[in-house]
Length: 538
Image (cartoon, rainbow, N blue to C red; front, side, top):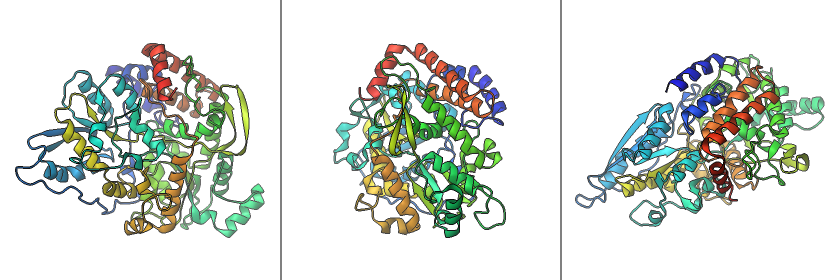
């Protein structure tokens, strides 16, 4: 559309100075574009490592001639080009067709066209697409429009591949449902954690030097202040033995690279806490935006401070370049999705056997929006998250082959395949099920991951961090109401303006709040209020 093109040109002009992803997508674009176009996932853009040969097992036997359950039917799935999660769909195509007699047609479009193509089809009842890998935040719009159907009646039906809904941990499981009905078939379980160089943090010389400089022991950071100190300490040191100074932190700060997701995870413990478990986005009574609160403001200032301890080139980096820097052993810290764990085990990684993973850091106090005051905590206030797309399949209301569609999605959700998906870094499918975590807390065996090529120390810490994240009762509320991505785009443009020095942090968040209010008015305040309260379980 023309409005998008005009604003896109402005976005790329701001890219050189902006510090957070999608930073130059202004509120006007958010309003013009509707709501939920997906962010670009670029994990395949890493160049330091190469994808290994690990593939999931075949679990569905071929059907006998004349006894294929969906012979003659076609299932059409919409994906966007370059989406890592598209890889497993291509992998399973031959197995699905042999087991069902149906044909799987894969349609791929650019990521900018993904949501638009899907929503156009379901809105106009075209029936072209039976399914897509949807972002979890789409559900508010898809359910409100009655564009997709729940799948409870298929879940225990022996005609379909079996997977255990309750195997998914409560936090990611909540994204599979909406208003008490099951819509998304388990696939990807996103969340963000902290990664650090285990070898550096355990080095006696670094431990002694850090203690002397900062007055407390070097350990995996539990708060963002500790993260800041560790990033400062390691910045400028040679961390991989090549004689070149390296960096304290690696972040992706280029326009259009999902920075608003990382700000959400980063800022959560500045806002959410035991006395304020839900008020992050809006006041649920009035839909007044809370994004300019003192907690959000402090978080933005701290994030900008931490970014000083990474390379200046980060302002131009996409997420793949940030991951490359960390995988090459050139940074001590980062925080992001689960892909890093699997990628660190691949050929070319300089950090296999050196990877540390932990719950994302917290704070010592948070802003309670209801009481309008800071609350001090005795222990670090660590807030978990399911930040990201958590991409999973949905069944369209006008699908001509709903049962065959569910068979496809259930096949990919089987335990045997899900374990392999979670072990690989390149496919973008992250762990979130008990069967993917190690016993005794989970049901997986360490032998499985060692067989997949993981270092034992790396995988134990990695899986424990995600288990801690998903089991933490304090979770950042996941926004999934109509217009979600419009709000996120509006936030992102103003985060970028602050980091580029075009606006003060205070002015940037104030501008974001103004855009939030305009979007709410456009979509209907009462409608948005009802949807928001429902999404919070109120």
